[in-house]
Image 1 (cartoon, rainbow over the protein chains, first blue to last red):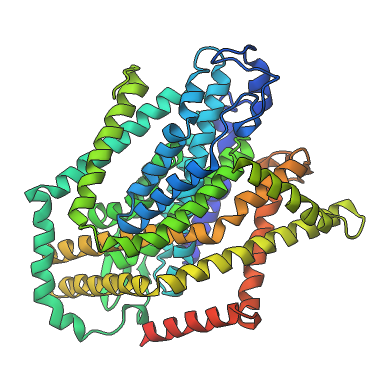
Image 2 (image 1 turned 135 degrees about the vertical axis):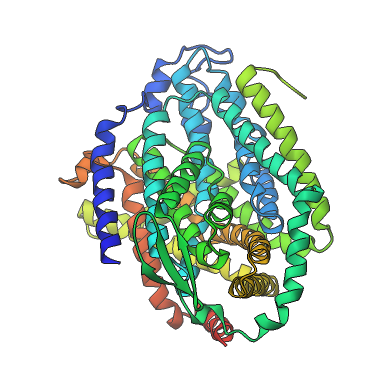
Length: 380
Length: 188
């Protein structure tokens, strides 16, 4: 354990001191005031009218997001969180980009004020991260109490997350146009929709049937076991190639290098898009790395939290990206209300119907954003 | 609704700024006032999430039980050497966990929602205020930081303080007893 802490602290110091110097300077990020002053002045779309009333982020003539619409959409997001799960983050992103009109507003500055276009895009990205990234806060504390945190796993996931967020922030802050962001977001949603479609096919359902059969076979034996929480996780052996942990009398192994690689790519995606971290870590660790869920759940939640804190911190503190605080606050209230309503309505809507609705939504959003963002094709 | 929000912000401003004018020493007053704002955020957040816990207790318990049962089944399959069953059951447990994770995400919103409003208000008052950083922090965070950088650690300290105060506060004392009884039930 001491060796792990020593390696982690050394690498953390290395990355935080050296990374900003070896990575591209400020990635061209400008402050909001600079972006507004550099923008062309006028009253048409894509121009800044200095005499207009201030709207989003305090930009003269910027859109005024209707708080009621923000609240309603966030209730929808919270409802999805508590009934289906992961798709809520995508809907939060759709809200920022399309429903509130921020994406369309950013796009008007594509040629007339590119810096302002990129600044608003970064603001949308960080807004997504605020809503989705802090999700792990409560979970992480609970898992620590239940002795489910695996230090070696968390350290390497965290290092991957740290390196990825530094890389993403310092190479993309102030550099990404809204159309590019929209295209990548759409592609990610499309891929997720594809996975959801696969799960509904007979091959995808085969795993569920196998689980049902296995559950019947092991149900009686499982009842005779003690509480999982009574055991706790213990690290037996540690090396970069293979780390062994013991849990409930069983030994499991994983490669810290794979954990680092997974942490890096998942965190890079989450830092870039603002979605994807929360629901990718655990499936990656259970399916690719092969660890049991009860071991990775808490550690993954902590990694999501650390990754998002780094990303938000780097974007906002180091790069000066701003978010519209009242909008974030109203959205958090809406998500909370939606999550309270979700369990009450879930029993009236079959899971398959819900999944079907979200598959259609994912394919529509994915296709529309990808075509719009990358090719400028407006569909439906 | 935007008008209501603006009116509420103005009214809150006259209340909150009073805590930044206690001693007359600007830096000390800033930290006292920010600590008060942070503590207010903690208290309001705890109040709202306690409503969620009371409102959806049965649902939360059923989710936790589903995950426990599926985890135990997967472990039993692993112990028996049935790798295929272990993988299938592990996936089921993962799916159940995913649902709980995002439900807790939404409940986190119940704890954290006052923070953006507090930061939004602080932006109107302190957006131009910079705090110089000494070496070696200046290498990581830059030569100076703003109100967000000072608010977050103070908020975290307030959360820790509230944790110790909770068993002695009215209403929250009841929530603490409720949470403790759940922890005791789960460990048996």
